[in-house]
Image 1 (cartoon, rainbow, N blue to C red):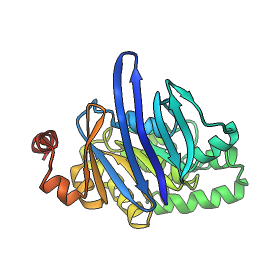
Image 2 (image 1 turned 120 degrees about the vertical axis):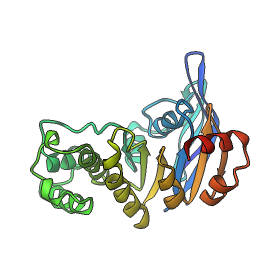
Image 3 (image 1 turned 180 degrees about the horizontal axis):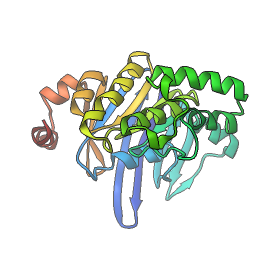
Length: 252
């Protein structure tokens, strides 16, 4: 079963077309990394999938359920807002910036959404938060405030916060781009463990080593179009598109 499917998704900001009929399907337990130059539309594509941005054209399915079928920005799918919101909760999102609540402790940040959105009892939410924080290597930081954490630790809290909602797919929007180089590895390690545990993941990244090692498929995006999609060994070793080849030569 596909977890997320985009069909001919287009998005423009004013007269600037950012996504041009993008189609991509992410299967259950699959890891897809999207690579490409800045301004290619990679982050916008993720934001369209989880409704942070409204699409102009195209269709978006979550777990084979059609949520959006848009023409000229109008969604033709008749669905209650509650049903649509419940479907969108199946996607967890980790951003470039951590966006933690500074006045709440680490464990409070992780518990907040399960308690207030999913209505999980506080005791149960705390137990799950403790387990997830231990999983991402932060068992000793639960009572700390975000200001006392390194950037890598804050990003791991952000990952834990997304996992606490028990999503079926995780979207990562360049999760290491705001980190100092020496902190990147600890976040990538958590992501590798998630992938190894069978989490479905769609990752926008500039970390070519991660994409090569962890991804089942790699998509190269340029100027709002997926120009090439294939296995990492094919994309990195024998790219078929000249623009893909140029990009990889510049970053590797």
